[in-house]
Image 1 (tube, rainbow, N blue to C red):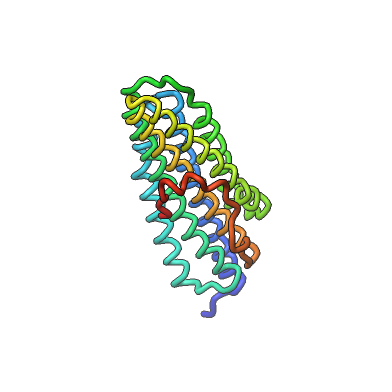
Image 2 (cartoon, rainbow, N blue to C red):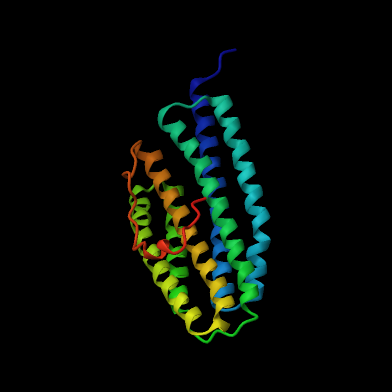
Length: 240
């Protein structure tokens, strides 16, 4: 008996909706993980640090589940054009979300070490960075669920602000380290935390670019906006 084309189309649409739901669920977990990690640093909250680290295996499991679902979709449905872009984009987005989760776990772990040291200087700059990174992450996850290119472009453009804050923090922390050798260890941890937050921002921007391409079939330009790069003359960042 021949398959009903309308049933096949409806079934495929249901599967695409399920894929979007899975990404949204994974995105929600990563949002919570980043929020907990930021709270652990700014408020020296050990419980939040534990919560952020404990979410990491769940995020990894979600990525694996989505990968398997995507492989099945590609094998059975053989999608074309826009549908294919959506499915491949889902795979790329989950990869970026998984890396964001890893960076959040790293921030949480370093926050625990930081609690051993007094903070004779304000963390207002770092707090500002955590808020901006969380805002961009929420916006880009919403954009992924809605296929909203305007929100994706908003996050893409905001990456420059994250870079500017990171570079200002870099210079500030180096100054503290030069003024008092006792600041070297805590400031080193803060430098790594700031770098991890900057990388979370980069992966949010990756997701924004992926969303834009999936929806429009076009790229967001060859050069994303970047802030002042003076700090990079001292420390070359990894781009993983």
